[in-house]
Length: 102
Image (tube, rainbow, N blue to C red; front, side, top):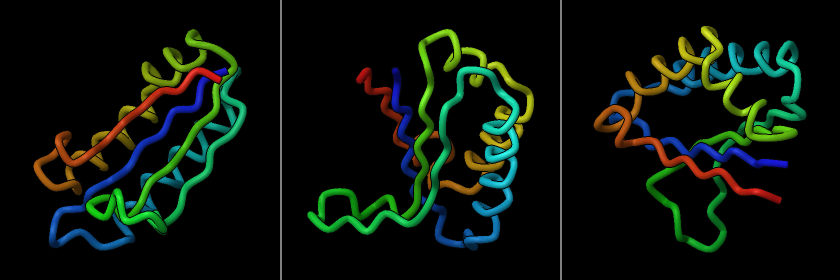
């Protein structure tokens, strides 16, 4: 199983509504994509004060790498990703991604 974690560093003028729209699209992808087990999003509380630059994020759980690759290729995922890139500081550089195998 893979846990795909994405943390977002918004551009200074980005409103939460911009992320909300992308999250709604990703929720729809999660409900339709085989092998995508879960999708969760919300504010990063950063209790340890180690990721203050990323106040919002989401996680996805996938059965395997093939499901993650199908998600990456999904046109609606790509549309939501484009919206996130457009609203993060320095575009894609304002997005942290990790894939943990558990």
